[in-house]
Amino acid sequence: MTRRYKITLAYDGTAYCGYQRQGNGIAVQQRVEEALEYVNLAHVAFHGCSRTDSGVHAKGFVGYADLDKPIPPKNFVRAMNARLPPDIRVMRASITTPTFDAQRDVKGKEYRYFVYNAPILPPHLYPYWEHAHQPLDIPAMQEGASRFVGTHDFKSFSSISDRIPSTTVRDIYSFTVKKTGPRVVFAVQGKGFLYKQVRGMVGFLLRVGTGDEKPETVTELLEAPDTRTARVPSAPGRGLFLWRVWYK
Picture (cartoon, rainbow, N blue to C red):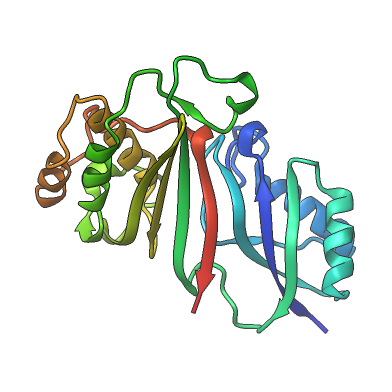
């Protein structure tokens, strides 16, 4: 009997072209499906909660797969990790309802972006932290981040993708900026996000932090949404993590 497994992944996205299969490189989804085929002895599709870009990482990426040959979740985790490369791990798995949908059932997601604010970036942090060598105005970035909270049209902060959304309006539940020593962490929670929206918001807040933009400009761009320009840069993918996903 077929069983649906809810699967939580963590992965280092450095070596991959993103989560979803595409024609320009190896994707995380491809490696997961290869391991699933070994466990299930037949091809199995893995359906993820979202698409992460090239170089973006995940700590709590959720997806599901339907197995024709069910095994206990504990054994499933062990078998998958024996076949996956070391930069992709199954952290948890459970048998869920046949109707569970990792994308449509999402109640919220949290992304975190990591910036190292010091003259020199330690090389072991390079794959996971963006480097900002100029001093950053943390209170100004915090004020700017607070202006994203709520329901807004984020067209000015997103990029064009191959899947055109029905609307560019999104709900942001919270957005914090915290600094500990040289480490600055941006944490944003919302129902869902547009293509490169988080990287656009962080990229703009970094411009606020260096004094190139003012916090109140966030509100101006949200109230008069337009096609994104160079004024809203995308922060590099390597600093971004899909941190967690929660469900109804």
